[in-house]
Image (cartoon, rainbow, N blue to C red):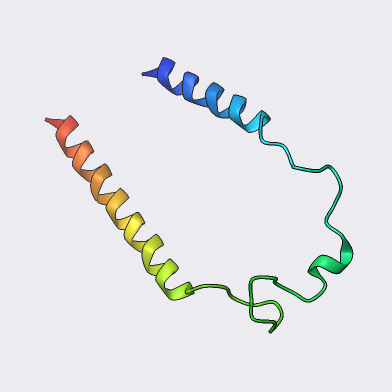
Length: 77
């Protein structure tokens, strides 16, 4: 089990090294001067549906907690 964890960490580190920027220079100043480019021109703010995202994160947490409890109960037997 420990070997699998070490292998997963090494693989993650190897993949993270390969993640490079497309260009080493920073974005031009004028590009983001108006705020968030994904909004309708209203400047910085929330993009998308924050309530739906919050519910999704909460649901993921609940599913993870239930799965962890189920695995713990199975291994206790």
